[in-house]
Amino acid sequence: MDLSYTDEEKAFREEVRAFLAEKLPKEVSDKVRAGVSLGKEGHDDWHATLNEKGWLAFSWPREFGGAEWNAVQRHIFEEECALAYAPRIVPFGLSMLGPVLQKFGSKAQQDYFLPRILNGAHWWCQGYSEPGAGSDLASLKTRAVRDGDHYVVNGQKTWTTLGQYANWIFCLVRTDPEAKQQEGISFLLIDMETPGIEVRPIVLLDGTPEVNEVFFDNVRVPVENLVGEENKGWTYAKYLLTHERTNIAGVGFSQAGLDAVKRIARIESAGGRPLIENPHFAARLAQIEIDLMAMATTNMRIVSQASAGQAPGVESSMLKVKGTIIRQEINDLTRRAVGPYAMPFASEAIEGDNDPIGPDYAGPVAAQYFNNRKLSIFGGSNEIQRGIIAKVKMGG
Ligand SMILES: Cc1cc2nc3c(=O)[nH]c(=O)nc-3n(C[C@H](O)[C@H](O)[C@H](O)COP(=O)(O)OP(=O)(O)OC[C@H]3O[C@@H](n4cnc5c(N)ncnc54)[C@H](O)[C@@H]3O)c2cc1C
Image 1 (spheres, rainbow, N blue to C red):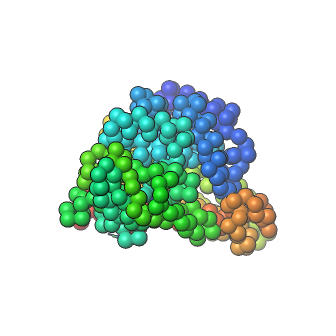
Image 2 (cartoon, helix red, strand yellow; image 1 turned 180 degrees about the vertical axis):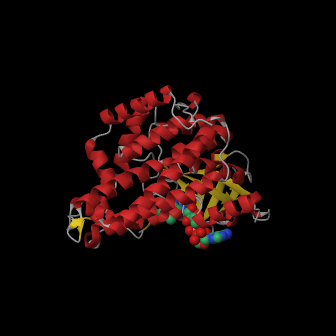
Image 3 (cartoon, rainbow, N blue to C red; image 1 turned 120 degrees about the vertical axis):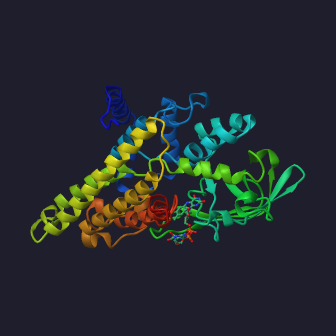
């Protein structure tokens, strides 16, 4: 296994850097750096910039308008974007639904939906979780009953990220309540404009309405919006989750976060000296840096295996656990670095209209700390990942 970059890969990194230097507006990267929300328009603009270059759907096959990058190219791109504070690509259409439609969708679904994901006409959200179905997703209860050439959908989804911006939602629904849990589920594409849908915001710990509840009351969905076969939705749902868990280690985000906390710790002081020279603080910083270096190496090992055609196994669970712990540790250390200035936090900081009481960099620190508690919950909670690791490695 070769963990060093080839000349082509190094040249590709330079190309990505040059693109970001030219096309990423400073006011946008400043917002991302400060943890300020971009709103729908900000995300749409960045998607359009990437789409123009042909880099928006970087993992899609070329036949569907993608760049068909290999695992190393994807890793380089995501790392450079994080280091440049580029907005994250919103994943719901591009890295979740797109691959499902390409593998299991009808030709008509591919022709209609895929171009609209690329050109931004459709903003998708993910309707998997329900109040009684999170880790135990197969116990979901939202019901779809066939009525002529429609399904009638009743039930509730929850934690629907950015559902307030979405005009389409892909949903797991129960079509056969008699079958064994996983076998009675179907995968439906639902237009959010359909009568009977209500979206209600959930305000998170950081004060922002990033997630929602979505209610369905006799919502009529044309049968042509069923993906694949009825009652086979669990297979498609699992396939989607393997794509949801890409870039799971988030090495670039951690690297950028670490750089930021070091910058702050050189400015802030403790006992008359720069905070970065405080032995306790420096030890914690060093420990995070060591953990990050170790994880980055593991990540490269897995990226290298993936580009050689090997599907990542339990290692992706390890990266999820370690990657999210490191990011949360960095958030915690940053909060400590700004000390009492993290206290007068207001959710407006994340919307960009808060006057920080302390230095500029302190404004969003508490909001970021609270917001990133989510990292160890979604995409399969860390406890669930530990269960998977134990089962595979220890045969539990
Ligand atoms: C910010 C945020 C955004 C989200 N966005 C979306 C979205 O867009 N669409 C969507 O469908 N879902 C979304 N989710 C939902 C997410 O997938 C679920 O929160 C997650 O699967 C956990 O489910 P739960 O919240 O029901 O917790 P539960 O499953 O009830 O778990 C509660 C606790 O028990 C632990 N636990 C559960 N089972 C086990 C077990 N077998 N062994 C050990 N520990 C266990 C969990 O780790 C957790 O700590 C989002 C969640 C968050 C926080």
